[in-house]
Image 1 (tube, rainbow, N blue to C red):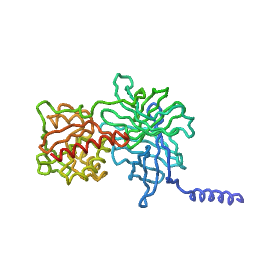
Image 2: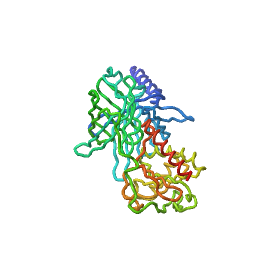
Image 3: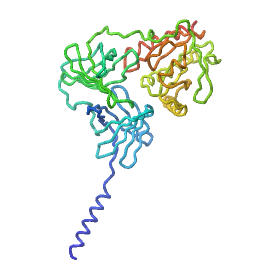
Image 4: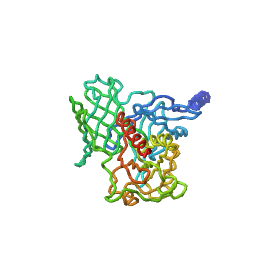
Length: 408
């Protein structure tokens, strides 16, 4: 009997100690996250946790880009990062300055997932102490991507800026860009990656003089090979030459509902004798988000001068209510000042909904219509802020065109 009291005391002390432990905290500051592809390739990225208006927030960091996410939820030791667009989510268990869980992307006909881990306080992306750089990748590169196990190729331009080991840049294609990429040169190895809420992406390459050879990984399973040669004169096809109307047509005629159910047409009084920018977008399209941010500011600047912007949304969902919810979410996210119409179901219905068009190549695409209601030009794709000078050149040319049409 004399031994019971000490044993009970020890047991109680253990209980008290356990109850006194502080629950794991999602600490403010920089974190290093990683996703793992189906082929066990690690795609790293960085994010910051911070407080705003008394609540936890998160920002994905890719070079100069900070994508703020306000849908952060903590329940006990579970943490949920829900992106406002793209229908992706990170579900993780919170440990001692660590996170471990799963990235999930919900598509209409399937659900994708990838293992996810994160470490607090790691502000590096690929290598904590990279080897001295043996090359400088700054400049313009001519690039060819070849999809794995196929002969499908995509031409691109690589634009990079390197300072020491650190590299920022992107790839431009005929249909858009890969947005902000960030990474480093480690010896003769280039590694750059991005995560902005959709599919994480990784580009690796071995550098040999003015040439690079490597791999691209995107999402759980997409893999392509790529080759590049430094070429200051590298160029893509003219973006105004890729999409056309059928021969004999110079106008468009349609009537689609907005998010309130009101039917909208180019023949409405709002668009008569106006220069109209017709934007083809989808809430699932990252380049569309870049263009929307720009067109929103453009519209506020030019609407009193006689310009209108009208967006045609083609969503992943054929069900009207699900498509409407996605579009409403998009409009709220960017506080859009111009209308968005519910028009169809992704690429497959663009030509069906607009029979005057001969072809359609990519989201986003933009049609400029003059005051007479005639199609002036059609631009395929969008060079976003990550493309640097290409972005500046595009918006300069675009606004000059609008000014000239307004003066007619």
